[in-house]
Image (cartoon, rainbow, N blue to C red; front, side, top):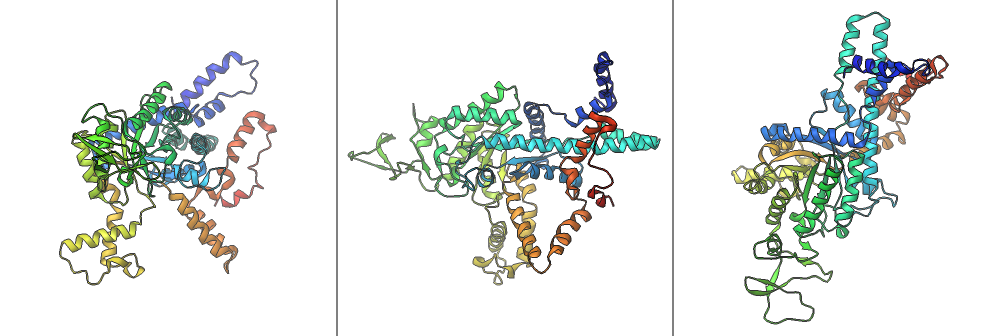
Length: 529
């Protein structure tokens, strides 16, 4: 409904109570309704799932329609990202948020900073989803509140042209609420535990849940050693659990992102159950590192392979080892099996950002699942500068180019900044997402931990200046003045925290008796210019 239609509807609802609902104004009701479009997390999950499905279809039609997101660990961070996106690009289309389990573990656990090993409180995940959407809905209320103020001023000035313009902006308002891809790690337990947590996440607003094929109680960060995977049937049980959670809650378009860590995981906790040769359990076991035996030793675990008795290599940790060099084959099998059994998108955790490597696996997957597409972690765990300089160095070597001015072992050196090689590497980094979307089937690019690093960097710079010779100028010149010059909304931090929204409500509730904070003595007025 348009703004005018919303006012008219509110007026009809108020009319029967005209004598008892003294002071309830249809315009105020309409404004509050528009400022709070989403009433529940399930409303958000259904709305954002629909957005993602449309974006996935658009990508299938043209890979130039890839999507992006940045990781968040606090509602304010997510809010500021979307405010910035609307400010700079005028639309939120194709831009999401990512909820990183790593950042929850490192920044939100009551135990203090933790490694990414599923040791943090699992209820923190749905709590952060709810927090993110609370801040995004407040961003809606704040922006619309400003438009309502402009509308009142235009009407008071009898400015019909401006009144019409602002009404159009209100009717065409684009919400800050966007899809969140939420990390459920390895499910925090068995399939039932995964189902229960997935329900909480969906009720909080999650439309897309990412789950990985590691063992829940052995879970490691995707870019660390010691990763242990589970047989496919165990992983599929958790994928089904998430789908049931979506269906139970009426979010039929909910999206499951199946992540495989097999590329860097050389271990499994158990031998897969198999009924017959060539089934999915047998295919999983085929990757085990085994030796043929002629006699059974004490405590041996044995399997039959091609009529031979084989002893899988078992470590003192009671984990079984895969054959070296089988990671890519296992990734491809994981991805095909996941897509054939309920997953919508894939996530292949790699050790470097290399389009050729990723695209090679995706092309094999697409031989079976033609529309297979990925969510890809543009991880800060990669040394992007070094990786891409090495890629350029190797490409130029293959081309026979003279590289005598470069030492491959020292390409990270500042001495190479600004050279032809570093410039070519930077250009490849700049176009990586576009190129990978076209060549490697990547639908969604994300950075897991961007604000973890930006917060550290900006804080370091501020501390160096403020506690050094610059003193207060270190803050004023490098922070506040830049906020003003760049039009950063947070320079008016009282407004950003909801002060003006509160004033609007006070006036609605108390009329002329309202004691408002935004009067002439509010120091935020110093930033009006």
